[in-house]
Amino acid sequence: MERRSVSENRILTSVVSRVSESRHLLLWTIVIGLVIRIIMMSVSMGYDADYWAVVIRNIDAGDGLYDAEGYYYTPVWGYILGLVAAFQDAILCIGESAVRVIEALPVEGIPDHPYLSATVTSLAFNYSVKTPLVVFDLILALLVRYLVKDFCGDSRKADLSFALVFLCPVLIGSTCVIGMPDTIAATFTVLTIILLRKDMYLLAGAAFSMAVLTKFFPAFLLFLLVAYVIMRNRERAHHGLPQMVLAAAGAVIVAGVVFLPQLISGNISQCFQFLTDRTGTGGGEDLLDFVIGQTRVLAYLVVLLASVYLAYRLYKKGEGGLENRFLKYAFMIVTLCLVYPPTTQYMVLLVPFLAMWIGIEDRRYMLSWKVMAVGSMIYMFSSNALMFLSLAEWTNIISVDTLISIFLTLDWGLVSIMNVMFVVGGIMQCASIILVLYIMFEYRIKAHFNRGGVNGISG
Image (spheres, one colour):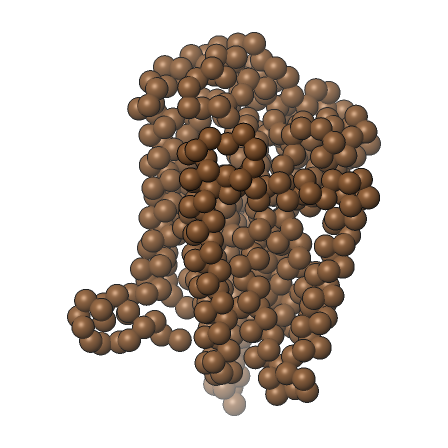
């Protein structure tokens, strides 16, 4: 009996030790991720940051989101900027949100770089606008950890997936350098999957609506989500129809809340201006913009057809292995969405799915994560010295003249360091997507070249 008691105590001690180690590792991951973000929030790419300053200035002047130039997205991020503006007015005294810097004016005349700006946002503005995005970064990583733990019951795998999300340079670059709200869309997309797994269909529909109305990419998951709901409720009365009605109701309610203020003010058409801007059908675009836009439309039509096919495949495969197959197909659809164009902020949506699949199923995708991480760092640092203009203008760490001199020295026209970094970073991010697709379809590719073997991807 004593030997058995000692053995049981050792097992209990081992379990407690592993739990303590896991929590310790998770805490350090959070601390390291937050420290990196606190440092990186001081820098920015002026093009997008200036737009957010314009929006907040418009709001402070009593204008709506679309009453003055400067905001070209759906209203969700604009409402968050409105809350930031209210917080700044009520609690903070940040002074000027942005100023025109005379010494930086030469960057606005550089050919082929029309997005460079001499308008420099303040450090206080940078931190106040980016803080909500950092919060969503953390929530997204925690949701991914929860989902992986729910799938496989392994805390270590869940912690790995958490780290792959929270420490991913793609998220850090999009949130802290570029300052784009893609992490919000990714968070609500993962939340949608969790809520569906818990049979909370009304809330799942609401979360999915928020994801789509923040950034449009999650919309391509719609058919797969419908097939998933049907399969989860196949044995119930009406085969999932009531559940889909609940989900649709949640989506409609959220859409109504989001668009009602714009409907009242007569700005509803401007809420979707991003669609015409991205497809080259808006006014004022040249032929190249039109061709690029139409190419994007064609690419998205292919993705749409693929999403319909994968939804049909999920339905036909039956209930065996439904959960893993659903996550795999969602991973595929999101990957296909980002083939064109694979820019850093767009790839935020891919990060949680990549991290989840690495944790749950296949560590080979780590290579893709690494290539993506390096590529995104090169991409987001492409504006090199200009990233530090806020530090130069609002502190004495370095002078604006020095930064502009460094940037102009590195800019040699077509073969400038900025262009090289931009292209190399973009190629590496595209390569990371190709690696994901290759691993997904490895069996089919090998079977094709060997004219035999395994037919198609497993599952």
